[in-house]
Image (cartoon, rainbow over all chains, first blue to last red; front, top):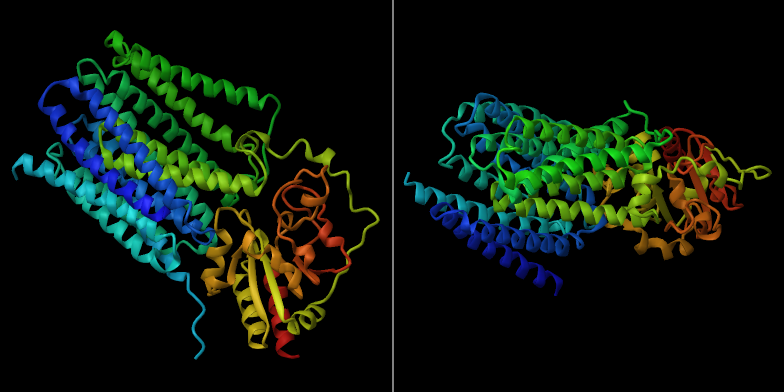
Length: 131
Length: 475
């Protein structure tokens, strides 16, 4: 039941993400009058994602709490996509450099985070069936 | 590529990645599906990165390549080589890197708005300020946690008079600057000019100081709460970045991370029967001297040899092992697994009772035991196993202390009164492996050690347990 709710919430999040993608396009097309609309949609995205997260994460057993921390940390290193733009866009040199440091820091978490999570999860084994 | 199609591809990539993240976390609800779930999440991440690289705003790739290469060169060895025993430190340091990236993005975005007529505007300023304050305090806070876990900063709570007032003043100062920056957004270039940069810089600096002062008074055993809380902050800061630059995937991923850290912090606080505020501002320190009135005077413990212990454990049918931070320090998990296998070979049953705050981060004991090849169906949570102690012949406590103290149930004067504990005292007999009679983190005597059914086996957990194993083999 809870997992069905979580899946539905997840689907809603994706749908809203899609919607607000449209808003962002509209925003650049017209003036900044849609800015508030876009911000409101962002709040929806945040709330739905947070609820989805709550529903799913409360079901993660304590057994896997350390891998969970490593995993969510790797996932939130998606901030790499913001760093990439700052490092590569047409900005003053020092801002590009700040972006480069940010890219490096986020990459450490993306690469290291997923590798170490996998390493941990690989260790969790059930009792082998008696031979 | 046509920019319109490019933009569409980026959006589709982001949506797919959001779905992959959510499904990936869902995989973590079961050990069997966890690995596949995380592989899906990693694939989603890759897709999002490729999508971003096609962004029309990106005109040079030199900086990006340097950043990606340096990051991979540091991240890959960190992922592959860090031993499982160093996992709490590694998690703390990864929060620091995540927060560093987010904070730099926040500062760079703010500086960028100097060239934009009208500045960031009040709404964006809310997000930028949140991102930078929480990012900056997570950088230094995580570094402090890392230092305490690694041991180059004292694990003891560091307190000084007036600490709470000073902390509060710094916090109010940072928030005040943030509010000022938001409020002056409508009044033109005040906040995007040099004056604004100065104020923004000061706000960032204060936030960095908060990180230090926040973690300074927190002791080693409270680390699970702090690490979880910093996890939450790092996630919320990432989410705020999404608001600041209008990027939904950042909002989604940050919200997931924030929710996870928040849930873990609450679980950890509950497991210690303390409120959030108490962990953050309480610093167990001061009150404890007065509280430990119940001294050990007149009470005696019974010490046994490894040989005696081997006799008792070797013939036991039902053994429950209670691991604690001491097991991690002594790196005794492999010796523990060997002992458990031996008992099972002799026809006994071995289970592991794991308290939520055993160790230095959520799930610490589980990871260590899994690394030592203990099957995960042998590991039990507090609620699952607490009734089982009644039927157990030998409860073997290895390097755990406060989480087994019966005073948490019986003595309202005890500082840990009300904390859920493992009912070790219900076992027929108890063997405690411990280096010496030093008290646990809470600094209080553990009545369990003075019970008639309890025997103390003093020594380094790894050495002593190996001895017990060879003794049992000789029975």
